[in-house]
Length: 323
Image (cartoon, rainbow, N blue to C red; front, side):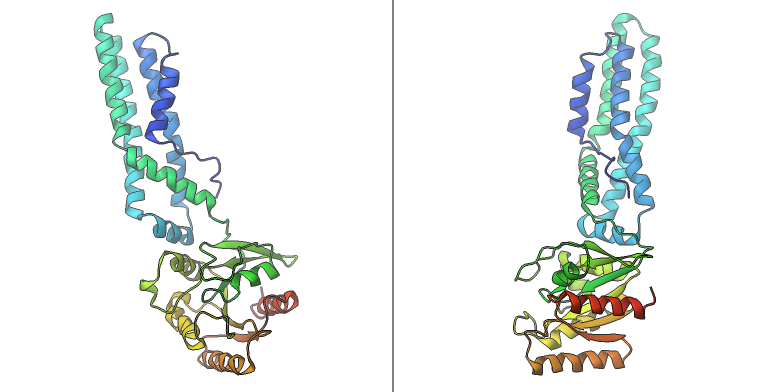
């Protein structure tokens, strides 16, 4: 998405542009009205460009938009500005003709009326312009993901080592801290395999609850798991550092099975360098049950802090999925 060039102005910013140029416009009424029409048209052209981008947007990005913005509000905002652009052209053509057909004294009154009608169109779209301005800023901050290229989605409960794993095996630099929900947004790194680059996605942590009850942060992870055609590595933390017991961690997988829609799922038992043998064995037993049901394809023991461990896991996943 080439979004950096798209700038949406608020109604107040459009008015400021008009004030800055209106005083310097030719003294004729036609020239002043044309100045207003030119500014409102050029200032909202980017809304048409945004509309084109949204029409071709991948469902993953639309899911993220719907988490932050109401889709119907976005569509209403686009309609409002598109209508204003269409009607302002009609008003410009109408009042230009009326000015030309008026006496000098009458033309000033016609100008005021034409100017007021054109500006009122955009004033009615004031909140819509602000919404679209916020939307484009939001889209510009989203990571660039190519849905047609190989993707590894790293998922799991909060604080199980997802970000550490992504840092260990890719160019991604997600924030790492020893508290839950450090990762609040989707972040992306890349791992070069020569003939292709694997996109490695770090997702926010998931809690043990139904998908429909998940909060905004969790729903960002669900957007990636549900909409991107990728491979999933679900990390489990069997150590005493975990904020969730092993049973609840595995229950998350059962909660999101329908979201995964048969995507290849691998389970990584992380933090084996600090977890007790008993808890590692408990996690392995739970993982084997999912493998026996055909939900998980393979199970790995690893420490995400160990780059060799993490690299071996991702390389084996790539090999098994024949990427």
